[in-house]
Image (cartoon, rainbow, N blue to C red):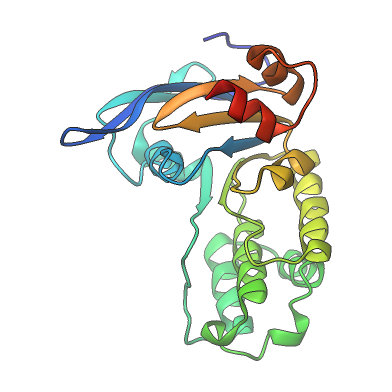
Length: 239
């Protein structure tokens, strides 16, 4: 795989199987500096398995991750990658304010940065509430606040817009675009293809554990033999 000056991480030939079931098969791609990369695929395509293998949370059967051409071992990836999985509820019995203060101390984040994130995500009105009592939309914004206070150069978010209405989603898109322009790379696993098109610079298309295609929307159209159309049309054409 070609390495350029914009390449941050290289993921090469990641494979994972559970007995006779092949969850991932030789998946390779690059993550560039200061880009928003979308991970796209239907349920069961291997997206979560890929994210957990990439971050080192789950052992894979084969494949490696490189940073600037040097192997990045699983135990070292926590210094480069912050991963926010879907479906978690950290410190559910704590008030939101206390939970966020805990993560601020854990990460060594400045108080002014925490205050900025709380304001951006409009969490001020729920700071006194226990995390477990939050609505789905507020819970998502609480989790995003936890992620945005981290400092690793690569931020991986699984379904960052789940539970958000259109206005909230557009607001979060602007926040993530600013995070990217300030020097971080983002890898987003997004189920809704229209949402992915709104924010991502490039895309990785997965299906049944295989890498179907990767590139910008224009490049994906070319690979699919299409002159126009969105991600949905591209995905259907490739499968």
